[in-house]
Image 1 (cartoon, rainbow, N blue to C red):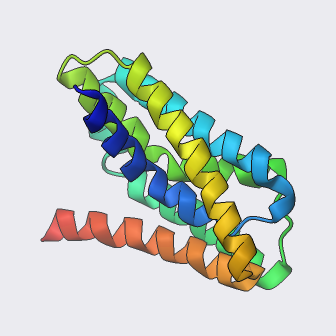
Image 2 (image 1 turned 30 degrees about the horizontal axis):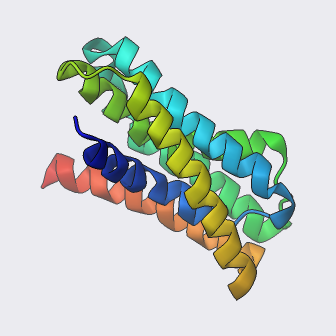
Length: 167
Protein backbone atom coordinates (compact mmCIF):
# COMPACT_ATOMS: atom_id res chain seq x y z
CA UNK A 1 0.00 0.00 0.00
CA UNK A 2 1.43 3.39 -0.97
CA UNK A 3 1.82 6.33 1.40
CA UNK A 4 -0.98 8.37 -0.20
CA UNK A 5 -3.45 5.50 0.32
CA UNK A 6 -2.39 5.18 3.96
CA UNK A 7 -2.90 8.91 4.52
CA UNK A 8 -6.33 8.80 2.86
CA UNK A 9 -7.37 5.89 5.09
CA UNK A 10 -6.05 7.72 8.15
CA UNK A 11 -8.01 10.87 7.33
CA UNK A 12 -11.19 8.88 6.73
CA UNK A 13 -10.78 6.99 10.01
CA UNK A 14 -10.18 10.19 11.96
CA UNK A 15 -13.43 11.91 10.97
CA UNK A 16 -15.52 10.53 13.87
CA UNK A 17 -12.79 11.49 16.33
CA UNK A 18 -12.65 14.95 14.70
CA UNK A 19 -16.39 15.46 15.21
CA UNK A 20 -16.27 14.20 18.78
CA UNK A 21 -13.25 16.37 19.59
CA UNK A 22 -15.35 19.39 18.75
CA UNK A 23 -17.73 18.46 21.59
CA UNK A 24 -15.17 17.91 24.36
CA UNK A 25 -14.27 20.46 27.00
CA UNK A 26 -11.27 22.50 25.91
CA UNK A 27 -9.36 21.65 29.11
CA UNK A 28 -8.75 18.21 27.63
CA UNK A 29 -7.38 19.21 24.23
CA UNK A 30 -4.08 17.36 24.41
CA UNK A 31 -5.30 14.46 26.56
CA UNK A 32 -8.27 13.69 24.32
CA UNK A 33 -6.32 14.18 21.07
CA UNK A 34 -3.62 11.86 22.37
CA UNK A 35 -6.22 9.30 23.47
CA UNK A 36 -8.05 9.40 20.12
CA UNK A 37 -4.79 9.14 18.20
CA UNK A 38 -3.51 6.32 20.39
CA UNK A 39 -6.66 4.25 20.10
CA UNK A 40 -6.81 4.87 16.34
CA UNK A 41 -3.25 3.51 16.16
CA UNK A 42 -3.75 0.58 18.56
CA UNK A 43 -7.07 -0.72 17.23
CA UNK A 44 -5.84 -1.61 13.72
CA UNK A 45 -2.92 -3.46 15.31
CA UNK A 46 -5.31 -5.44 17.50
CA UNK A 47 -7.56 -6.09 14.52
CA UNK A 48 -4.61 -7.16 12.42
CA UNK A 49 -3.51 -9.73 15.00
CA UNK A 50 -6.98 -11.07 15.71
CA UNK A 51 -7.90 -11.50 12.06
CA UNK A 52 -10.86 -13.26 10.51
CA UNK A 53 -12.30 -15.26 13.42
CA UNK A 54 -13.26 -12.30 15.55
CA UNK A 55 -14.40 -10.30 12.53
CA UNK A 56 -17.41 -12.57 12.18
CA UNK A 57 -18.42 -11.82 15.77
CA UNK A 58 -17.52 -8.12 15.99
CA UNK A 59 -19.03 -7.20 12.61
CA UNK A 60 -22.45 -8.20 13.90
CA UNK A 61 -22.29 -5.95 16.99
CA UNK A 62 -19.69 -3.20 16.40
CA UNK A 63 -22.32 -0.69 15.35
CA UNK A 64 -24.32 -1.33 18.51
CA UNK A 65 -21.25 -0.87 20.72
CA UNK A 66 -20.41 2.47 19.11
CA UNK A 67 -24.05 3.60 19.12
CA UNK A 68 -24.56 2.81 22.81
CA UNK A 69 -21.32 4.38 24.02
CA UNK A 70 -21.76 7.56 21.99
CA UNK A 71 -25.46 7.91 22.85
CA UNK A 72 -25.01 7.38 26.59
CA UNK A 73 -22.20 9.92 26.83
CA UNK A 74 -24.11 12.32 24.55
CA UNK A 75 -27.26 12.08 26.67
CA UNK A 76 -25.25 12.56 29.86
CA UNK A 77 -23.64 15.63 28.30
CA UNK A 78 -27.00 17.15 27.41
CA UNK A 79 -28.81 16.46 30.69
CA UNK A 80 -26.04 16.57 33.27
CA UNK A 81 -23.53 18.95 31.70
CA UNK A 82 -21.17 16.02 31.99
CA UNK A 83 -17.58 16.97 32.60
CA UNK A 84 -15.31 14.84 30.47
CA UNK A 85 -13.35 12.65 32.81
CA UNK A 86 -10.64 10.25 31.70
CA UNK A 87 -13.06 7.32 31.49
CA UNK A 88 -15.34 9.23 29.12
CA UNK A 89 -12.41 10.13 26.88
CA UNK A 90 -11.32 6.49 26.82
CA UNK A 91 -14.85 5.27 26.02
CA UNK A 92 -15.14 7.85 23.22
CA UNK A 93 -11.73 6.80 21.93
CA UNK A 94 -12.86 3.18 21.79
CA UNK A 95 -16.18 4.04 20.16
CA UNK A 96 -14.56 6.15 17.45
CA UNK A 97 -11.82 3.61 16.71
CA UNK A 98 -13.90 0.49 16.10
CA UNK A 99 -13.65 1.14 12.36
CA UNK A 100 -9.86 1.25 12.72
CA UNK A 101 -10.08 -2.22 14.27
CA UNK A 102 -11.89 -3.41 11.14
CA UNK A 103 -9.25 -1.79 8.92
CA UNK A 104 -6.59 -3.73 10.81
CA UNK A 105 -8.44 -6.97 10.12
CA UNK A 106 -8.69 -6.05 6.44
CA UNK A 107 -4.99 -5.21 6.20
CA UNK A 108 -4.16 -8.61 7.70
CA UNK A 109 -6.26 -10.30 5.00
CA UNK A 110 -4.36 -8.59 2.19
CA UNK A 111 -0.96 -9.16 3.79
CA UNK A 112 0.04 -5.58 4.58
CA UNK A 113 2.37 -5.00 7.52
CA UNK A 114 0.42 -3.06 10.14
CA UNK A 115 2.85 -0.88 12.08
CA UNK A 116 3.46 1.92 9.56
CA UNK A 117 -0.25 2.32 8.68
CA UNK A 118 -1.14 2.28 12.40
CA UNK A 119 1.46 4.95 13.15
CA UNK A 120 0.18 7.14 10.31
CA UNK A 121 -3.43 6.66 11.43
CA UNK A 122 -2.58 7.61 15.02
CA UNK A 123 -0.55 10.70 14.13
CA UNK A 124 -3.09 12.03 11.63
CA UNK A 125 -5.95 11.44 14.07
CA UNK A 126 -4.06 13.32 16.80
CA UNK A 127 -3.57 16.38 14.59
CA UNK A 128 -7.09 16.27 13.14
CA UNK A 129 -8.50 16.21 16.68
CA UNK A 130 -6.39 19.25 17.57
CA UNK A 131 -7.93 20.90 14.52
CA UNK A 132 -11.42 19.93 15.74
CA UNK A 133 -10.75 21.52 19.12
CA UNK A 134 -9.45 24.65 17.44
CA UNK A 135 -12.51 24.97 15.22
CA UNK A 136 -14.95 24.37 18.08
CA UNK A 137 -13.17 26.98 20.22
CA UNK A 138 -13.66 29.54 17.45
CA UNK A 139 -17.33 28.77 16.85
CA UNK A 140 -18.20 28.07 20.50
CA UNK A 141 -19.90 24.68 20.49
CA UNK A 142 -21.86 24.18 23.72
CA UNK A 143 -22.10 20.95 25.67
CA UNK A 144 -25.67 20.51 24.45
CA UNK A 145 -24.56 20.76 20.82
CA UNK A 146 -21.65 18.46 21.65
CA UNK A 147 -24.03 15.89 23.12
CA UNK A 148 -26.23 16.07 20.05
CA UNK A 149 -23.15 15.56 17.84
CA UNK A 150 -22.20 12.42 19.79
CA UNK A 151 -25.71 10.99 19.56
CA UNK A 152 -25.86 11.82 15.84
CA UNK A 153 -22.57 10.01 15.19
CA UNK A 154 -23.88 6.96 17.08
CA UNK A 155 -27.12 6.98 15.09
CA UNK A 156 -25.18 7.41 11.83
CA UNK A 157 -23.01 4.37 12.62
CA UNK A 158 -26.06 2.28 13.50
CA UNK A 159 -28.11 3.35 10.46
CA UNK A 160 -25.23 2.76 8.03
CA UNK A 161 -24.81 -0.76 9.35
CA UNK A 162 -28.53 -1.52 9.24
CA UNK A 163 -28.73 -0.24 5.66
CA UNK A 164 -25.85 -2.53 4.68
CA UNK A 165 -27.49 -5.41 6.49
CA UNK A 166 -31.04 -4.97 5.22
CA UNK A 167 -30.44 -3.06 1.99
